[in-house]
Image 1 (cartoon, rainbow, N blue to C red):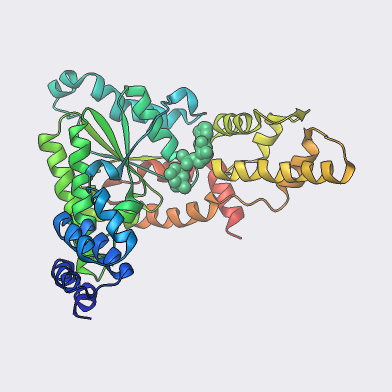
Image 2: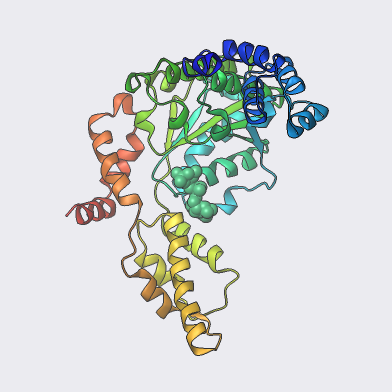
Length: 376
Ligand SMILES: Nc1ncnc2c1ncn2[C@@H]1O[C@H](COP(=O)(O)OP(=O)(O)OP(=O)(O)O)[C@@H](O)[C@H]1O
Ligand SMILES: [Mg+2]
């Protein structure tokens, strides 16, 4: 009971000590022992985990001892992407590519030139925009363009309810990535890690931001050759300290796919489907503001229609424009509500021009029209 209490009191290290004592007195059942051992491992207390498992009763626990507890390694929290993609794999988005070239690719290719003009190639870059519009895709393509390996920080595996565990894992992951330099470290959904400290009442989440700050600052100093890229759908929720110079001080807006991007997404999505007379140009014209993910959904719906037809007719008809006409019925652009919200932030929270490119996008005629229509 004491051990359990220590856990809920955020004193896991003391809890582990208590569990060790309990296991040595043969007072832990198998489930408890496994739980205690994994708690110990998450705190990097491998020896305690071994002691708990070796004295606890039960078959699985004993087997685990024979194999030995797994080490917690920083590389467990970063993913190595296997297939390399480049800008050619990202349809349209000319402006985004141009900005990335200026902010990331050129400085990495010619650091000496940039240094001469007093501009540094370091610091982080934050990609932001509505969901499903290609942030993750373009981040990976950026790595491909500069010829650097791309490591993805696995936030879902880092965040842990026990005090101190997430912090330690995050630091480990950064250290591991640093070992792998030169590389790009990608933090997807930065808002999940760097949620504004002022919005939080818990000491705990605050310390995660502290670790992130520390790591970013050391990336800047002892970390030549590691570019930290991040993405977020809710950039205004990110702690202001993370957006200061040397951290994620440069932001790039990734808008919903433009005409070329939508054509590319539709063509790729239909590459393996037998079609007849599908007019991509027409579909592009009707799908303004649909995200990449929405376009997938559109294709899915069209496929459902043709499958229905195949099942009821016993034939195998190709996918046609008619199926898309049906698919378009009550298709909603998921980016619109996001853009509505973003408009408020761009209007009232554009500190230091941080959301300038978003603001410019929202002011374009076509977008303003869509938004006013959607805002009925
Ligand atoms: N310009 C594009 N060219 C080709 N495919 C695209 C493009 N934009 C988006 N896609 C496709 O749309 C889907 C969603 O893209 P992605 O996952 O990169 O979006 P995201 O902005 O990271 O979304 P989230 O905010 O939900 O993480 C992916 O399957 C991606 O391949
Ligand atoms: Mg993404």
